Length: 307
Ligand code: 3PG
Image 1 (cartoon, rainbow, N blue to C red):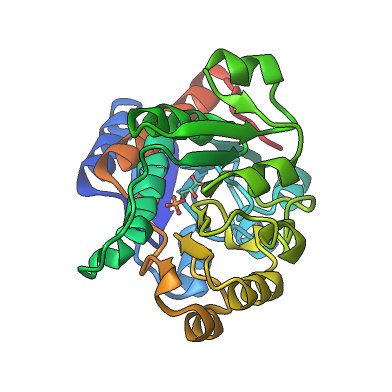
Image 2 (cartoon, rainbow, N blue to C red):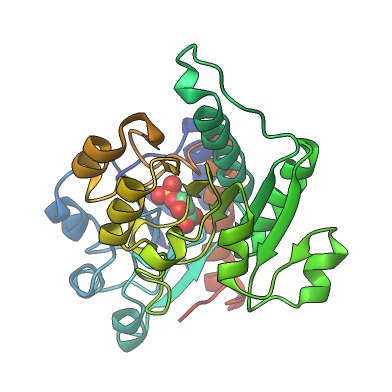
């Protein structure tokens, strides 16, 4: 039966991704409704009213949004992290929530290196910088992104370590990556630490002063994960006391003004979260989301369900 699918993206997909989504939905006899670059939550509440399915990125899907979607059966987060979706409210309303794991991982991993190079080369200011070759990188969480970071790091000639309590040490070491036993061991022994943990009740504010102050002399923390995982008071304290530490982030910290004031050009923050903002990642994640919706309605396939 024909379905209506809303693509609501405050940060729009590349055009090729929207075209690809439309083609998948057209082929299934479904209708696409597009809500891009909206700035008012009211627009989302109105647009979701009559639709059967919703594709989003980092857009907030609150209880209010779910309640407004009277016919809503499925929400697909075109991407990895679904901390922006109120999964409990969705479950209560019998709405399936899915993500598209792995589809935008390469883009995020590449950006992590872009930020490392930027910091290593002193923001391309003309001052002498350093090289990545011969340095040690610590990958904090060895999932889809972490594994790609490991591959790229080896290409740069870096020594690679990882910490992930949810992944078998043997699986990490099979990739030629040293699996360290503790988060402290990772932070204290690496020149670069790249964060790839999700924002959960357990991880929020877990990157704190104690951990940051254990970092090696001249080390850099790269955050392409979520701003919530960093304890910002601890970050400011560590960056103020340790004038050797560097911080690169694809998420704008709430404390950016104070941080920049204290740490100046030791901090680099992108203008807008853009880890997954490539045509390739948009196509991979967007098309996967559309296909998952069609498979859900036509075949009852709930493989990527997260609630
Ligand atoms: C993700 O969780 O997939 C990434 O953080 C990408 O988020 P975005 O779709 O908002 O760019």
